[in-house]
Amino acid sequence: MGRAIAVRMGAGGDQVALADLPGSALDDAVAAVHAQGGNARGFAMDLRDTRLCNAAVDAVAAWGGGLDVLINAAGVWLEGPSREVTPEQWDQVLDINLKGAFFLIRAAIAPLTERKGHIINIASDAGLVGNSGAAVYCASKGGLVLLSKALALELAPLGVRVNVICPGDVATPMIEFQASRYGNGDPEGYKRRLLAHYPQGDDARFIRPEEIARLVQYLCEPEAAPITGATLSIDFGITAGY
Ligand SMILES: NC(=O)c1ccc[n+]([C@@H]2O[C@H](COP(=O)([O-])OP(=O)(O)OC[C@H]3O[C@@H](n4cnc5c(N)ncnc54)[C@H](O)[C@@H]3O)[C@@H](O)[C@H]2O)c1
Image (cartoon, rainbow, N blue to C red; front, side):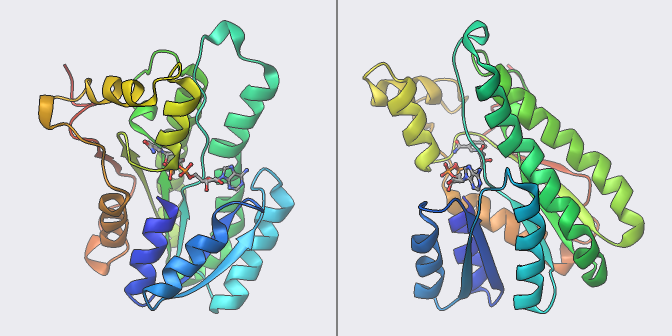
């Protein structure tokens, strides 16, 4: 999703900084932005290191001559019975999905205030409704939703907007990871079971990362100025009820 967002924003003329783990698909993502004529730079970092969060934001603001938007799209998935969750797994999921996002935001508040900027956090449908077998992931994403709302109120007097997007299942490497890691040898069956939850029936499909990117781009436009503190579902109605 981060890559799709960067490609769209870059193609629209924005200078885009991407951060991801060393050895990840970071270089490919930067190249994808360049291939669309955009201007991008990659920052290899583990966002669990709060010192690196500060350093990355400083470096990006120096490179860009300021900071207009921070998008938190990094994340990891964990599922399985809660009785089997280890303290290390808990820390990994919460540190990446929630703590890392917060400390990037903390570092970005000053430069975003200068530019009346905007923060967009990518949570999940699993941050709005319970997802059986994914309690720790739900805790991290539910935390991110309320973190976003509280920050929207806190930062509004500074002119900084904060919104949170809650996607349903999106066709990204994360879904492929889920299907291969937790599909009991039948990744396609795992994906079919995910889609079976959707109200579209046989027409259900995964959301495209580009569909998330378009919403992000809209939120960054001046016309979206009144939108802050919003929790925006883009999930084919999966959290609408039953
Ligand atoms: N794919 C889905 O169905 C789906 C649905 C709802 C929400 N989400 C959430 O949306 C966001 C984007 O997910 P995606 O589908 O693009 O997943 P993805 O796995 O394709 O991308 C997540 C990225 O986060 C990076 N990352 C992981 N740990 C990191 C760390 N410690 N430091 C820096 N980067 C790290 C990974 O290297 C990866 O590039 C995530 O927060 C995810 O939880 C995904």
